[in-house]
Image 1 (cartoon, helix red, strand yellow):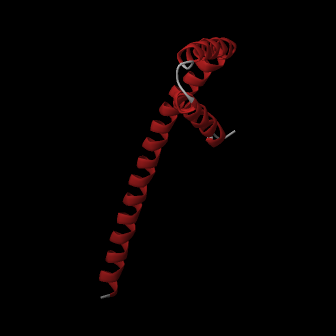
Image 2 (cartoon, rainbow, N blue to C red):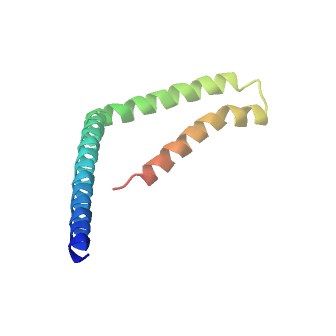
Length: 105
């Protein structure tokens, strides 16, 4: 009886060691996947960093062009038309600021 309990405990120990090794390998694979994902994100942030001054300039030009286009098209509409025309721009700006504030520093 005592010998049977020891063999059961040894088998249980071996099963736990195998499960631990399996979990360790799974974690290693997940970390490799995260590293590959992060390298892609880092390459994107590097590209955005290189385009930073241009993006600011092009954004200002696009904003001015959009405002000029809105001004000419909004002359015939009332206040409601102006608000509805500016709503998508306001929503995009709000989402952009929201995502920037959610990013970790």
